[in-house]
Length: 432
Ligand SMILES: Cc1cc2nc3c(=O)[nH]c(=O)nc-3n(C[C@H](O)[C@H](O)[C@H](O)COP(=O)(O)O)c2cc1C
Image (cartoon, rainbow, N blue to C red; front, side):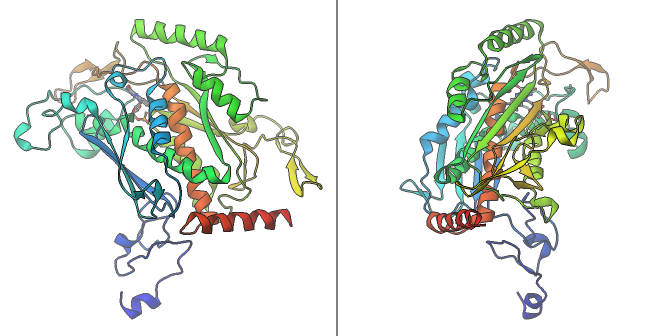
């Protein structure tokens, strides 16, 4: 960097890595979302990339910004991957895979080093796709070209945008197999939150038209125990049997089912995220992360859309003060744990609606992209209902966003430094 360039470099905001101001496009890694914007010199403290095709050899997850000194429990991450694979209604693929992370960077003797952490997750199904997913041009022709676009999938928009002739070139990456990497990353994020008493859980609120009644008095630990024991990750045995019957009925008719999942996070301090700029708002960042999930169509925090239908007097969470505990309290939590783009310190509650899967065994009307003749959507091996898995995936992306916001608030290069910052802030709030 020249002297002149360094003099004109704008202020760095909460930045851990140096930017190359001589090349703004290369240097601008973007705000918390990691979007590359010319001239933007802020970098998120915690960021990730995933790579890999659904039937390629491996998935890759790289997380940068995990500070040093955190215990990394690979077995716990693998347990989350196993949770993602479970659930009544999944297709044959989950019988082939046994997802496990292979760490290749950033961890030594069970502790984070502060360097990028990379996980490889093998696609066991690749052995059936070696030629069909080969990188070698000599293998062109080994796979049948997919030309019948499925309504609701990425197929048609993807081939038009990327000027591709084989829908497989789009669907392989659009596939929710990618979320395996995001669950591994979320598992890591939970281990950043764990020492600070933050717990995150995803479970199912409804599948199709069947709503599960979840007792609001249950603790997260109780909710975890009950929903993890359920085949469809609900806390309501009556709803569970209705949902299983509905999945069976859809399977018979070649149809699919969507649903709504809820993620709750407890133990959050006040003040994660910020009101000062749009892309620092915790609610916005959570919504982006959740809507980026395959098949996600809607996100609500707290009362969500109901908030638009009731009066302010019914909605807003009245404030109290517990003098003995030296803390502000709330009489309700309709906000879902954020106000002004910041955590309030109350439990975070987010809901995500996922549409029914678009690969139908009784396919819908479509067009062959090559001949332009009427056709029906292609049939790929597919799930009937993936909502129990979607709950684990939503939990994972929420955990990541919370860990990212947590490190921005209390950031440091080691667990000990962050702990000091965290305790100091809690003391400051207590003495407010
Ligand atoms: C856990 C999970 C599993 C999924 N499995 C399938 C599947 O088996 N078949 C399918 O057509 N879509 C499946 N999807 C949805 C597609 O990946 C998604 O609809 C597609 O990529 C298009 O993206 P969009 O729905 O976000 O627009 C799944 C989604 C999730 C979250």
